[in-house]
Image 1 (cartoon, one colour):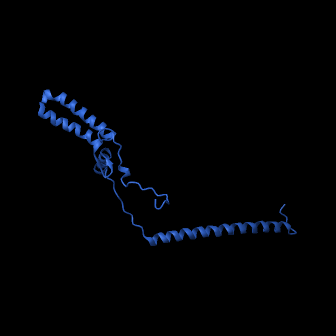
Image 2 (cartoon, rainbow, N blue to C red):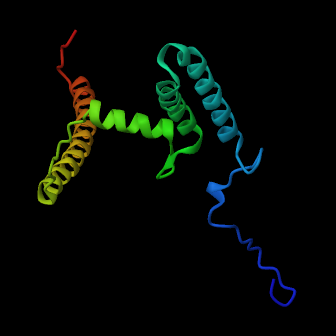
Image 3 (cartoon, one colour):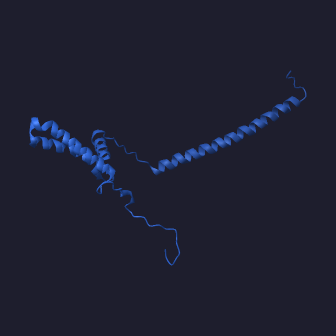
Length: 153
């Protein structure tokens, strides 16, 4: 607003797409849920393996089990979430696309366009000639029927 005149413009922060609503201690709902799930998975792995493998290896397995679950909520790269990033990497390495380059000659495209336009014009001329010849044909038939000595019966 300048001098009491409102020009209808509202300024919006440029990072509006990156806005996250904070639910618990500055974390979004997605981050909170994935963090809790990672802690539960780590606890399960620890309690299932600490007697048979020992505490040292159990803790390492806990970290290995919790890391991907926590990454789902916290990791973003170039605007992609962790799941989208994993799908993109999988598609890039496992499903390579063959890219083909087809060059287009501007001159050849003009020739095709010209041929198309001339064929349209010829069809219009032929349609006019057919319609005029049909009219002429009807007139010839009528004139032939009117002639004396025409014994078409």
